[in-house]
Image (cartoon, rainbow, N blue to C red; front, side, top):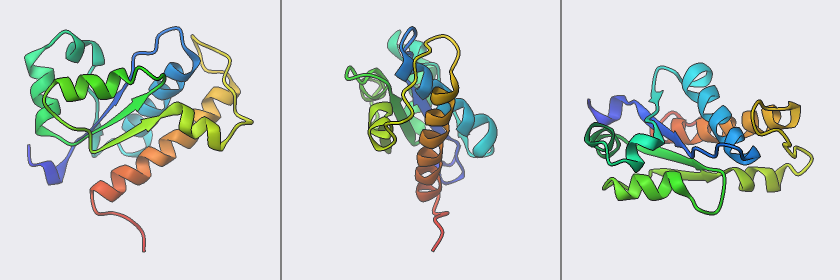
Amino acid sequence: MDDACGPILIIPCSGVGKAFGLVGREATYAVIDDLRPEVTGTVCLSLLTLGDEAAQARVRERRTITIDGCPKMCARVNVEASGSSPAASFRVVDTYRRIRELKPQAIAMPDEAGRELARALAEEVVAEVDRLLGREED
C-alpha cells in the first residue's frame, strides 16, 4: 500500500491492569474507529512482541504512531524492534501532566476522567495524523 494513502498505524501499549494503559487503548480506538477511520489502523502489540512476520512487515511498510502508558515504552520499543521508527510517539502521562484534573482510576473499564483523558489524547494523535498526511489547517 502506498504510504501517502495510509493507513497510518496507531499502536498502543497493552497496559492491561494499568489506568494509563487503558487510556492509551481507548484513545487508539477513538482515532481508528471514530475520528480518522479512513486513514488509520492498528496492529496488535502482542504480535509484534512475538515476532509475527506479517505484523512486523505492516509496521515497516507504514508510518506508525505509538502510544505508551508507562515508562517501559513497550509500543515504541516493539515498533523499533520490528525494524521501523515511529513517525510519532505519545505517552499518556504527558497528556495527563497537561490536564491534571483528569486522573483516571479505573483499570478495566474507563471512568469519566479516563474517558476524557483518552479523548484529549486522541485529539493530539489526530492532529499528528493530519500533520503526517499534510492535512494541517493554516
